[in-house]
Length: 353
Image 1 (cartoon, rainbow, N blue to C red):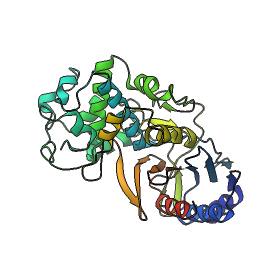
Image 2 (spheres, rainbow, N blue to C red):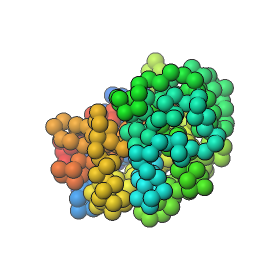
Image 3 (tube, rainbow, N blue to C red):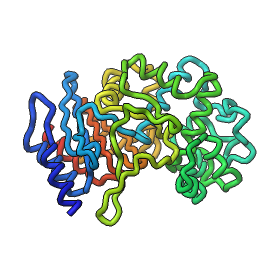
Image 4 (spheres, helix red, strand yellow):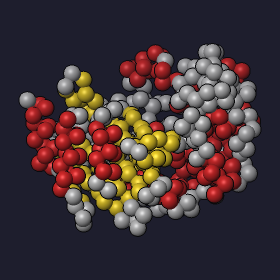
């Protein structure tokens, strides 16, 4: 019964917010959300002429039946890594950080380098490119147990504690392995060299210059009243509201809350207009090893090359794409943890672009 109710609400609330609305595409998005039990989504396609086409479907809050709006805020989780990478590259441009220097040169004293796997030899570039060999703190049972306890205060140092004295997974530079720990180390580097919270650096280098008024770093100890989107997880066909589950959101590996419009403005500035970082810095950012650059993936959607990053957090998942050949950007934000609708939405939107 609950699934049938959700299906009806999705169909009832789906609306196209675009001048050139495409009813077939809207219908396809609706069906993909229903098939994948995803409560709601915002889908934005940005074109080379700066025209944005926005589709919405479903509910931001199932309990109160609040529909998703075009400017709905979402946790973007690991898509935040591209923002931090840009900030690091801005500091490289200004001569504060050397990409190929040992990362320990920029660590604060709070990081126990002698206990950190590969801590004495890994470089800043290797952290950015997921080639550090440093284990991923989210893979450890101690992290899951901490979430279950409902801990309200997370710090990078708490997360480093889960991997101290563990064996490295590879030598620095030897192979790609996705590890959130890399970006917490980068958070501490940014904070150490700038003498301010990383959120302030993001605001200074990205949010303010691009006028991203609906973008901020979440504080897990002070929930924002403006954050109206509820996030859900599914188990056994049942949806549960997990909006308040504290999995460490607010740290630099995934702490940003934003809208599809703001995220698109960032991606367009970085990858199409190319006015956010220098040409040299962008070239380094997009030089991939094992499909990963500096805080960004190179992937394929159908037969098209895309620059992209996905993100999953408690109750939310999404992905941004930028297609260099057509200069089209695509933003997909959902309020279901690990929604399987995302790949299908990307394909159907591109087929109708």
